[in-house]
Amino acid sequence: MKKVIIGRNIDAEKSFTINLEGKITRLEALLEYMQGFIDIKDFEFLESNIKNYFIESFEEKYRSDFPPIVNLEKRLELCGVDIQKLDKLISDYNAIQVQGFNAKTRTAPKPNFEIYANDETAVNRYESTKKLCDILNDLRTSQTVYPANVIQGVGGAIGFNFQTNKFDINLNYINSIPQRNY
Image (cartoon, rainbow, N blue to C red; front, side, top):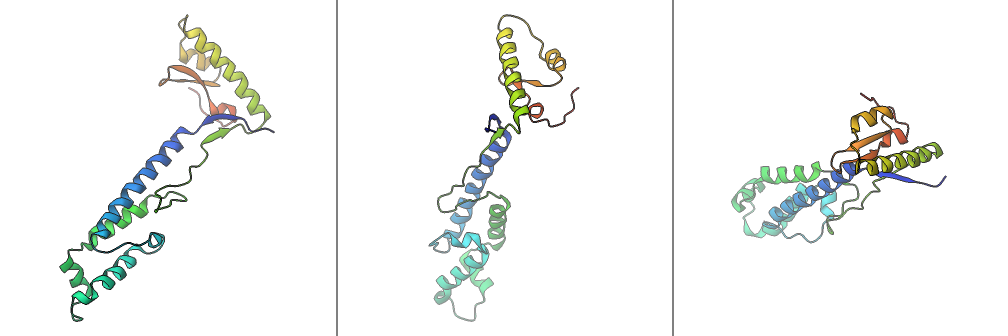
């Protein structure tokens, strides 16, 4: 069977975009804070323990600036490093999961958000409800059509999109996903 696109998962696409933008924003905040104290050569450390990388790089950079008797916590404090802030930035960055996120390029592969018909019956339902929606939308230009009555009359096979102010296909009906119609 040939795949037929019957719609687009707009909610999942918006969620992906928001998560990606949030991940980038949090990455930039984390890197900006870390670069105030250490030099970051690559982004490999983001895949492992970020805090350990920071502490190891900090010790390497500032080892000769302090006598050996000064412990790590005191060195961090004297240089103005706020460990709680670093932990918060790290946890914020790790809280957002974006599959395949590349920190160096600040991109992630965009998933396919298209919705496909499951079988031949779904393709037939799609074509017939698409025709019905087109006819009703054309009729609305010259005649008053009450969307609630039409939707109830066709048993929820179509819906009304209040953003576009047009009748639209009900994807749950097309793919035989049970739903409640009121």
